[in-house]
Every structure is written in C-alpha cells, then in structure tokens.
Amino acid sequence: MASEFPEAREAVRTLPSYIAGARPDGRPMWKLSSNENPNAPGPAILAALAEAAGAVNRYPDMAVADLTHAIAARHDVVTDEVAVGSGSVALIEDLLQAYCEAGDEVVYPWRSFEAYPICIQVVGATGVPVPLTQDGRHDVAALAAAVTPHTKVMILCSPNNPTGPTLTRAELRTLLGAVPSHVVVTLDSAYIDYARDPEATDGFELRAEFPNLVILRTFSKAYGLCGLRVGYALGHPEVLAPVRAASTPFGVNTLAQAAALAALGLSDAVAASVEENVRERARVVEAGRAAGWRIPDAQGNFFWLPLGEDSARFVAGANAKGLLVRGFVGDGVRISIGEPEANDLVIELLQEWRPAEGSAARSL
Ligand SMILES: Cc1ncc(COP(=O)(O)O)c(C=O)c1O
Image 1 (tube, protein in one colour):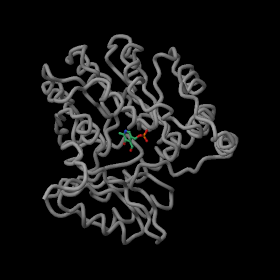
Image 2 (image 1 turned 60 degrees about the vertical axis):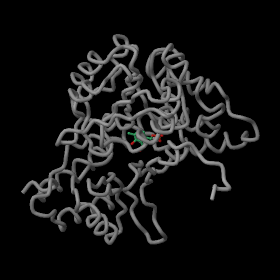
Image 3 (image 1 turned 90 degrees about the vertical axis):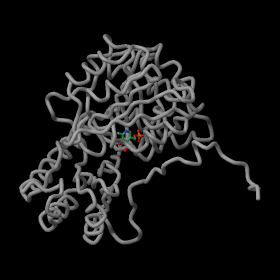
C-alpha cells in the first residue's frame, strides 16, 4: 500500500544519523562526550547576553555587521573575507550548497567529524572518504589522489576530530598545490587553538597563494559558546559570496552575535582557558601512555583510544565510573578533556582498564 505521507528524497531517507555525545540521564555524570569547553561563560558574556535578550522581539542583524567587523579586525582581513554562520557546521552546509550539484564529489578524510558525510549526502553530492593513516593522520597522498574531474570540494580537519593529530604546514601546502584551483579546499580548524604541534598551521599564511582555501573557525570550543551556535569562514571574497548567499536568512541569532562579539574582547581569559585544557590534556595523555595505552598525537581538547571491537566495553566501564565518553562502534573511543576532577577519573580508568592483547590501543 502506498504510504499516506509524502516521501522524502532518497538521499535524506538513507542518511547516517548524527550521534550526539551522550547526555547525563539524571545521574551525576561528567560529560566528556562532545568536546565542549568545561568552563561556563563568565560575567562579561552573561552581561552581553542579558543586554541582547531585551531585543529579541527584533530580528537579528542579517549582515552580522558588528561581529563580522570584529572578526575581520582580529585576523587583519577585510569584511568580505569573513562569512559568519550559525555554527561552523552550518557554514559547511552552506558551502556545499553553494558549490555542489548532485553527483559532484567531495573528498574528505575518514574517520573524521561525523557531520561531513551527512552534510555531503543532504546536498546530493557524492562523498569520497579517504582513510586516515594508522596513526590517525590525514593521508595526504591518498587525499590528493582521490581528486577527480568531478571533485568540487575537499574537506580537511585539523586537528582531526576524533583522532587528534594536525595537518602540518608542509602537508597543507602539498595538498593545496596538488588540488586544482577550482576545488574549494575547506580547512576545518575548530580545535586549532588547542594545537601545540609547532608544525601545525591555521592555514592563514597560505590564503593569498591559494584563493580556493576556506578556513572554518568556531566560537564553540575555545570560546565556550557552543550552545549559541556561531562560527565563521575566512576566505577569498569571490569564494565566500556564494556561501553567504546560500545561508539561512537571519541564521545567526541576536544572542549569538552579542556573545561572540563580547568573547572576542576576552582574549586573555580565552587563552587562559585553552592553556588550562592543554595542560590537562598533557597530564591525562601522559598518564594514559605510561599505563600502556597507545594514544595518537592529541592536539584538540580531546584524545582518541583506538580500541576497535573493545570500544563498547570501554564505554560501559567509563559510564560505570560516572564518565560520559564518545564511543564509535568497532573503531575507538574519544574522550574530551574536562574539569580536573573528571580528568582524574579518566586517568584512574586508564590505569585500571587494560585493552585486549593485540589491540591497537595497547602499546605495552
Ligand atoms: C571538527 C569539527 N568541526 C566543527 C564542529 C562544530 O562546530 P560548530 O559548533 O561551530 O558547528 C565540531 C564539533 O564538534 C567539530 O568537531
């Protein structure tokens, strides 16, 4: 019998689901499952939000003018080189909408941020996932080799969620040099503030040479505003104009604009919160390695345990200890760096728990 409901497009009916990090179910749990910033907003952000809240009977500024100016000033670029979106995920969607016809190819590393294949499939493009190397890094040669005449966009993620390593400056340059200039190369730098690898790059110095490079940044991680949904793209005006044109009108809400603007003025506090996370990351990762875990280079506010088939068992063990972590079935477990007390529990867990003999997560 024919369904009584309208049928969605096949691409949408067959989408992989986005699995959000687990949330507490009433028990007190440490939430280390979504790479959030553990620090709640301070008084300056709360004051900006309170002031902006009084005007929410009005539409937001559609041009996001004040925030765009502040971002442009921060990066020493002109405002046409900035596009603000309701989170960097929305900018990925807008960019794919702007550049991909049905059947066009989008090359991306895998495993990486799980929104990529979903966004690609929604626009009707064909995703071309390129496996990471054994140590969780982008396979630069394979990414370059995956480009065909049908490729419209390449997405790169540095530091890579969920595995942790960054692309190096040399790797990014090699890729940009190998990819034709009509392919938009999107460097998702959501976690770049946490990177301490001296070879890591935010891609900025390569923009003049490669106008097809678009850099994505977010207020969700280092700035701690993920609940408000605001991110931005930096790129050539000609490349960004279609991205802006494809975006939802008034997509960046009034509170998000106000809080992000205020957050840009809090550089010292943001830097201090990032530094604390980086210190805690070193403490946890070093303790884990000392306990016999093989942990790929962790450059974001999280680290990766390549547990394979043992992942579900580990997640259950973490839950029993009051920790919510993000398991990827059959692949591995990602743990965010959180409050020091939560990180203490993670260390305890890593010391108590032993990956199976022969597991890729085991170094000793
Ligand atoms: C690699 C990566 N990019 C983007 C995002 C999402 O950013 P936003 O909150 O700006 O949409 C995340 C969030 O987890 C992420 O891991």
